[in-house]
Length: 158
Image 1 (cartoon, helix red, strand yellow):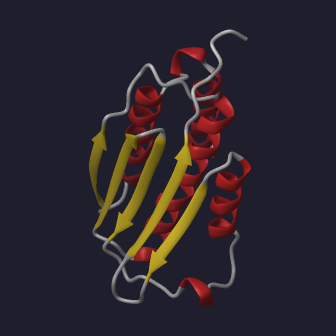
Image 2: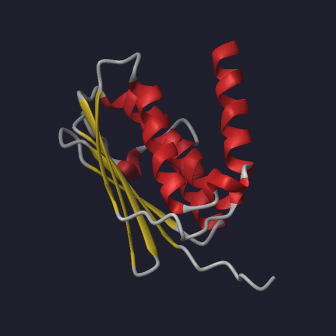
Image 3: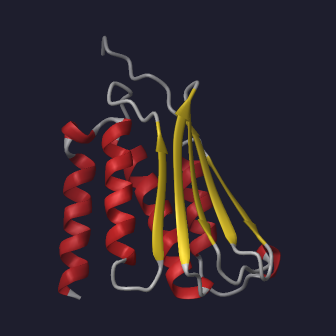
């Protein structure tokens, strides 16, 4: 429990630190977070991170919601997927941030899901910041969670 509290405190401090208000820092943080989540599991992590510029600014609210959605997706892989590998892909092109979390696990039928609120929470978090979250899964074929968000330049004159 104390490890979780320290982790939550670190996440909060990171999210509000203005030095991290850019896409490059966001990508680095997500890789570090996923590695830490998977380190006590047999799941291998693979990362494909493309062109996350440090001059593109991201608000702390946006970073927090992205972090929580990715964390929920990885927690689902750890708890439910019976996966041996999770692959995180991140790219930024023409103002669009695209993040996918893909596993090689057992998969499921998204329409048949009952129980927890994780998938709904991920979608709501992204909707709250103007993004979207899609879940693609089929039994026996793993799952892909795809997060897409337009990152608008912050007004530098304000």
